[in-house]
Length: 341
Image (spheres, rainbow, N blue to C red):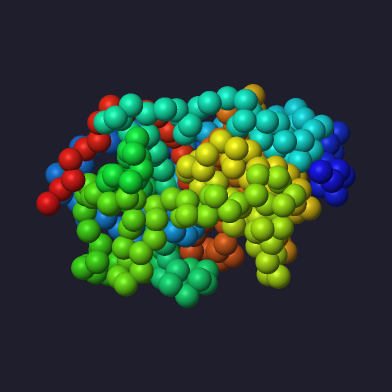
C-alpha cells in the first residue's frame, strides 16, 4: 500500500477564512434558521417542483441542507477555523475507513424479515432558467426543499419502497423568478407526493432501467484494496473522485467496500481537510477548479452530506448560496408505507 504523502495537508497554523467560505456558511446557516421557524400547514395536495431525486442515478446532482452540513460548514470552517486538526484529509479518510470495518452500523445490520433499512435524503437545490443547459441563471431561479426516503428490504430481491414528499419552494430569485416558477409548475411531468414500489430495487426511466443502488451489480468485482479500487475507477477525464463519491452515495455498499472506497478517496491528490467538528470531518475536493465538499463521520465511516459550490456569478441567485447540498440519515424500521395506486 503506497504512502499517502502525495495528499496535501491542511494545517491548523495555516487555517484561514476565505470570503467564499464565509458567504457559503452564512447562506447555509440562514437557510437552516428559516427552515426551523414554524410554518403554516401545507396544502393537502401540492405539486412537486423539479425532477425526482436521482437516488443513485446522478445522485450527486441533487441537493439538500441539514444539521450535519450546517455544523460542518459553520462550526468548523467559519466559527472556529484555528481549531482545524493538523491531520491531513488522507489521514481522516483512513480513520473513517477503519471505522467502517470496525463498526457494524445500520447499513450492515442483519434485518429481520419485514424490516427495512430506511435511508432519508434531504435536499435543497437551485433550479434556474438555464439549468437544462448547465449554465448559470439568466433571469430567474428558485430553490426547492425535497425529501425522498428509500426503504430497503431485508431481502433486497423484494420490492424497494420509495416515498417522495411534496417539494417546498424556499426561495424565488431574479426579475423573472416568479414567471419561471409558474412555468415549471405548469409542466405535467411534475407530480405530487407519492409512495412507489420498485421490484428488486430497479427504477425505470423511459426505456432505461437502473438499480436504486447503482453499483450493486459490480460490488463483487470491485477490489477491496484501496489502491486497486482507485485504479478500477480511474478514467482519462480525471473524474475518479466523483465516481467514488457516487458509489458511496447513501452508504448502501457493504462495509468492506465502503472502507475501500474511503481509502481510495484518501489517495486522491485533489483533496484537503477543511474542518473537523467532533466526529464530523469536512473534506474539499478540487478537480480543476471545480470545488466540492463532503462530510464524513469518522466514527462510523458513513458519508453524511455533500455540498456543491455556488455557480451563479451574477445577481440572480444570492451570492455564496451553494448550488446544492444533500444530507443522508439512516435507521432500521419495522415497516414501510403502502404504495399509492
